[in-house]
Image (tube, rainbow, N blue to C red; front, side, top):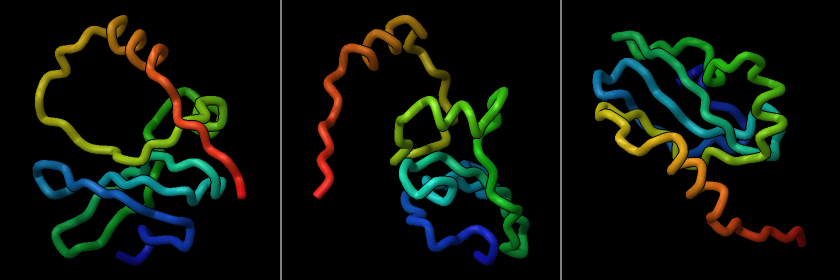
Length: 101
């Protein structure tokens, strides 16, 4: 799709249940961390300009987060895990060490 693909390591993508939206991970912003980009696709296959998930300040939010979104996905079900439990699991999970060659 013109305007969606880039030279900056776009990867895993998921379509919304209605087939009108696409979310994919991309390093197009800084070349380092993958972030979730969203686009709407019309019936003719034309996509809108991809955008980051809205935050108060998306550029600053993703810069400080220092996390990669490698497998972004839409969900149609209710999220049943509580915020506190989710935060505890994320904080207490071991990270993955990365080395540079």
